[in-house]
Length: 109
Image 1 (tube, rainbow, N blue to C red):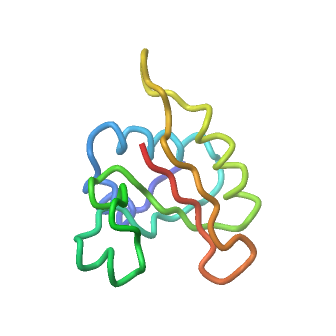
Image 2 (image 1 turned 180 degrees about the vertical axis):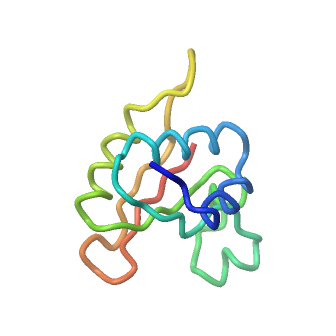
């Protein structure tokens, strides 16, 4: 799966381990997903209603958008992907607002 330039730029803001996971998830999902959020400043996190200890603040979270079926498939896949020996996978996999405007998959490593 080819990653759009705008998504690559967002993913470049992540910590190295999270970035590796995010690219792997995009490649393995096999369906188009877009990156809607990665790193957030504390002000931006408050603005969007993020929790004070958000993984986005630590460059360890990505929100993906797509159709509902793709997001469900990606959520299941996210739990199984490991990028190397000793990798424990994600700390959070959350399907948010599924079936509603603003639906997305939040994954944090």
